[in-house]
Length: 277
Image (cartoon, rainbow, N blue to C red; front, side, top):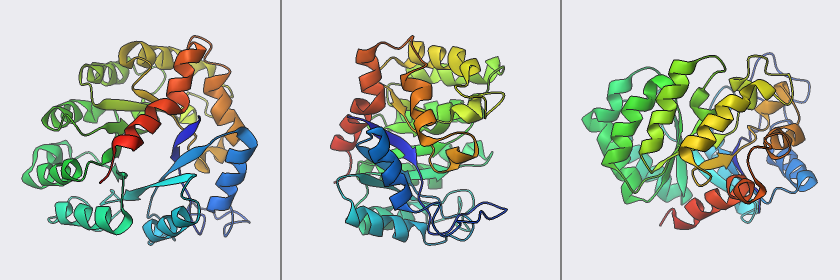
């Protein structure tokens, strides 16, 4: 069982300059082709209602209905590019999204307003996540980790799943140490995705310079709180889907096969089985 914890799909390619195949490169069917070719059973679609894609939640929901056994939607709720980002009513908007899309999880990308997690609005937002038994897929850098630890301790039954190794960077020991401290909170999880973001040279497959970071995360969080992810199709700026998989499966030889199986899919399947209503 292999489950991709971090992929995207868009009707129109969102990044500038637009690619020649802008109307097809981000389509779900491209992802499914890559999954089939590489033996990946299921993927979480992390919605992002960014440039040219204001209705990405609806597009992804429609494609999930077409491929219910292969795809899971984590809706974009009040991410940092949204006009509603950290404005009053966040809890209501999360409730509406959870019911409309029958969510098991949602995604939330943040800026540098760390105090919001402790605000009345922020706490109501995550209380709603807890009430609906949702996985919180969070894009934040190491500076957010102290605030995340407090938040996760308040909501101990909500899994908080940090994108792309929480944006650790090779050479940033202080940032990595903040992430490692969060291993003390048992409901904080880390995606082993975004090797190209962590590396000093993103295109230099298999990003061997990231291995001290991956080793440290593996040692701190153990094999049961890490989840592999591809970052497809954005990863194509740096490498192929197959490379994104093999950067972990083939080249992180310090992770034994029994633990690789957990990280490649069994951990996330367990979270998904428990999530939602």
